[in-house]
Every structure is written in C-alpha cells, then in structure tokens.
Length: 78
Image 1 (cartoon, rainbow, N blue to C red):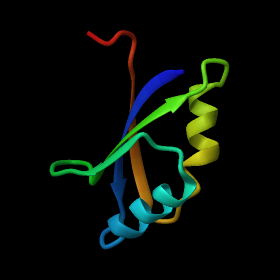
Image 2: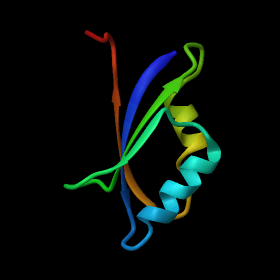
Image 3: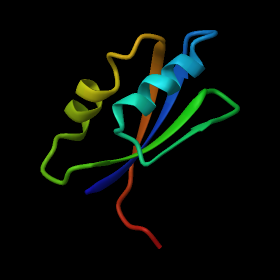
C-alpha cells in the first residue's frame, strides 16, 4: 500500500458535502478540514499495484464540488 495525501479545494459552500461523500466512499484513512489554500486534507492508502493517478481520478475526482486537488506521494515513514 502506498500512503498518499490529497489536499482538496472545494467550491465555496461545498466542503461539508464533499467531505460527506468521501466518507461514504470509505476510501480514506483520515480526513481533516484545514485552513489555507485548501479546504480538506485526505490521507489514503492506494494499493501497491494500482496507478495512483487513475485511483484518485476514479475514486475521488468525480465528486461534485471539488475544484482542485494537490497530491503528495510518500516514500518512507520515520
């Protein structure tokens, strides 16, 4: 499994609806509301044999209200 963090910018007024939809899909390990340029921070584990971009595209980016994402791949936990 590959740990990936996705920062999500939502259209104004949609952050709670986006968070609810992510929760219903059960793809996340952790999900936080955040301050700054992005509204949500999503931690998820992508199967080792899966294409990270396709996984995120197929499981996340079709949620209404998502305006932009920023994905950070991880390599090693200390």
